[in-house]
Length: 114
Image (tube, rainbow, N blue to C red; front, side, top):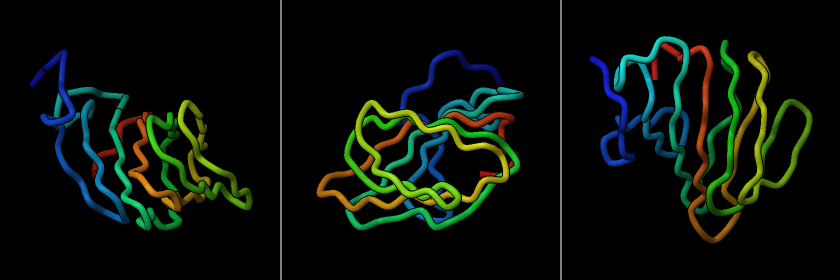
């Protein structure tokens, strides 16, 4: 399976530990080997609970505001902000705003599960 272009409505939905994740670039959607890109949607009041991964992540906030917990740090998420999450670092996101929080997520290497 090899695709070059995938629209958000063509992504595979994943609901794991909070919010809705649309898998866009992933081994299961385009056959990528070392990279995954997704869009995460958190409605007001929703959260992704504290967790960690064996892969690195980079976030780019597209819309909305919220709170990010990264290890012992806590800071506000807002549009046009990037966040780097090292592998193994515990993190969580909370939409404490009044509109959906929409975040573009890049993961490397691509996880097998989600």
